[in-house]
Image (cartoon, rainbow, N blue to C red):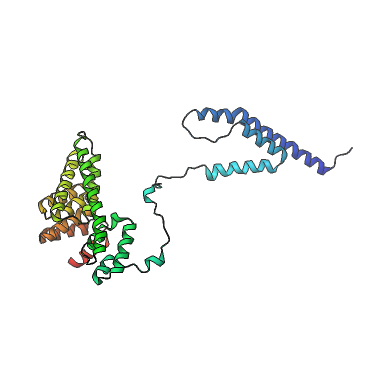
Length: 319
């Protein structure tokens, strides 16, 4: 029986395909799998290829002549040239604190809600009560200033809502401050976690100015004492925001000497941050120290610090 030329070519292709598949299978059994198994004992991450994988690929190459061989060859070539290099995730963070869920607005409710300040100004009871209930149902921590304004409302029901919420929040703050302050006294000499937590917690509420003048001064002095303790333990733990918080709170209770001390510390330890300049500008402006004010402004203009819109407007006004 004579073999045609087409049948001969087909037979040659099958033989070559079988040879390629056998070579790949033997390479996987004898070289690749033992080598990867040896690497897996260390910490290096490798492909999860074993003898079973090479057997399956061998069978695919036999069942799909030429196509199977080309498929695995091209796949491996793509891996070596495109997908081999790892992705740099250094700048990618997966923090739940940065995730903000966007919830669709309730237009039927919010259409008729006006700010508390406007409701108090026009003395519109229905709008004021609606605004207060909307605040109470939401995140009251961020709206304590508006709730404090509602204490002055003529509507007794609105004032009652505001007083109840404010009283609970302030009592919670007082209790937490006492606990955190007591925990600081039990810390060892090198520990700073207690001071850092208390400093940030107190500044977050004290900047809203919702306490009485006497109580506000007492808490600000406690905050300054905590800041001093942290500074003496480890000044490197002070961030620009912490310097700014202590400076502004001390200026609000007119402790200008204390504020000056922290402003100078901020200028010394955070020279590349905007707060190192803005804190001094605010202090010198309040104390009417013109020469120091304009010297600091000129230093800010000559620096490479990025300014915000408020500071830029101040520079334009006084330049």
